[in-house]
Image (spheres, rainbow, N blue to C red):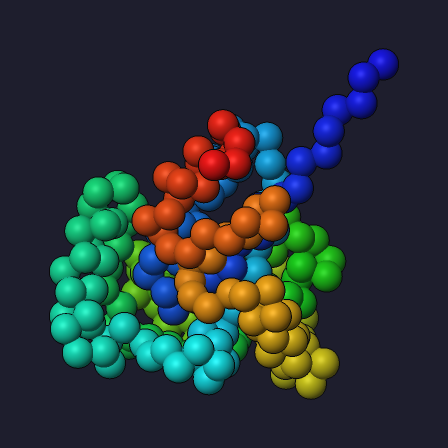
Length: 205
């Protein structure tokens, strides 16, 4: 019997306050299924990444920030993804990151569903997911006990998880959101998903 080669998963890095990360989160699942790959979701804290890269949040960058205010809603329309400009932007990703990594220790699939639900809550419903209460409310809709999650969000060990995950991402060369690594090859940006798809379907180029 011929052994079926094991295909490495797609490592998907994103920040909960990144609109392009939000778009990628809605696109990566279908792409991965078509290619027969799994996706490992990795929420990160771009603020920590910027301390290393020297980057800044888009709204604070002259010219580029003005462009993004046009490009983000246009990109949403292009892909048919619901989008509402958040009232507060950007926001801290600490609470959603802690919730994700705490839940991922128990159920990675459910944690990925929570990540997407939190992104939807922020970018489609304009809910401030930096609030632990709102993060818990979103998680509750997926069956996560609110009181249990609230306790986890205040646990010092859980608080350390996002920083550790971000440091691991930086060690792998991750500097933005979204960022993908597959077969050791890095791809940065929602606009690199077409290249990622070709890599997965036709092989390295």
